[in-house]
Length: 138
Image 1 (cartoon, rainbow, N blue to C red):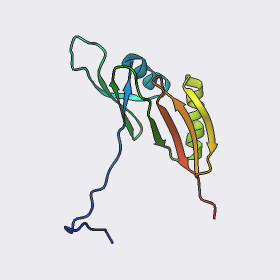
Image 2 (image 1 turned 120 degrees about the vertical axis):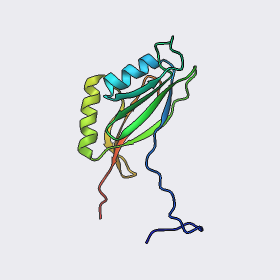
Image 3 (image 1 turned 30 degrees about the vertical axis):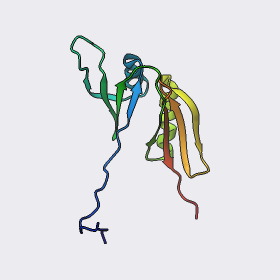
Image 4 (image 1 turned 180 degrees about the horizontal axis):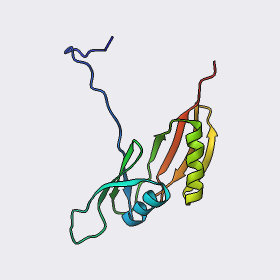
């Protein structure tokens, strides 16, 4: 049975989340996400045709999309959680990122809260937690 609001309508479901990461040096961050982390650029916006460095860029890898937004210093680092399908995927991305020069802050491991995860940092010190849920023991 589908839940209904007081008006009788089904509640609105969220379909995704697209974080906006503030970056100090867009050229450095963009190169890192494209070259080191394997993202693809979808589009960019400059706001100033004379400025070759964009102010805002949309990136994706698989079904995960994020935005980079050029901001003045100091940048307040944020933490985002990126879900992967399996333990094998976490191990595979760890191998890929170790080889590509990513800043691996913590290698993959099982966590007491039921995830298997690794942690990396980007040039602006944003923390990306790449994880999957561990199968529950019964």
